[in-house]
Amino acid sequence: MVRRVTFLILGTLIFALVVSGVAVAGYTPQDIYDDFAADGDLDRNYSDAELNAYLNDAQIHEYGDNSITDRLDDKVLDLVSRETFPFTGFQLLMAGIVVVVLIGGGIALRRLSRPSRPSESSKES
Image 1: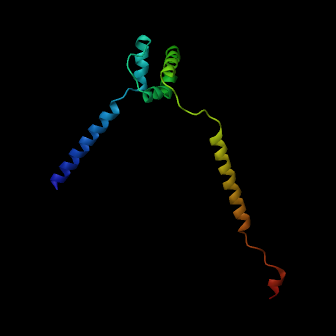
Image 2: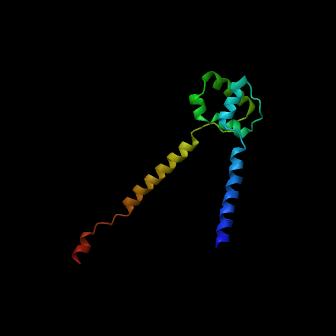
Image 3: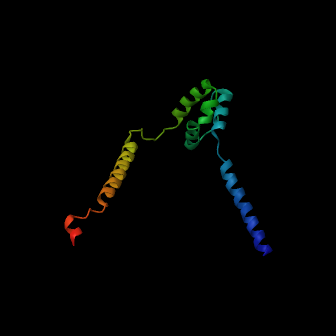
């Protein structure tokens, strides 16, 4: 029993060390901002995922110096090609159609499932 618990603890510890090493391996948006703020140039090679993470980071854009973030945004946009499809409203259209179909179907089921009123001839029998 003690041996099993020891293996469980060691396995959990090794797993935690491996996972934490992977998480620390990349640069954060703050690292990219600090690198650019130091001398006005990006000195390291950043991956597209790291640059996209910087572009999508609201905290840096909210609290960072606007003169730095504006120049850095232009630099990052030159380095990375964003492959996102522009918003066309198609997703909203599809959601609207689903809402109309569900509400219309619910109303139709409600009206069709009401019991019919008994006729005069069935009351007499």
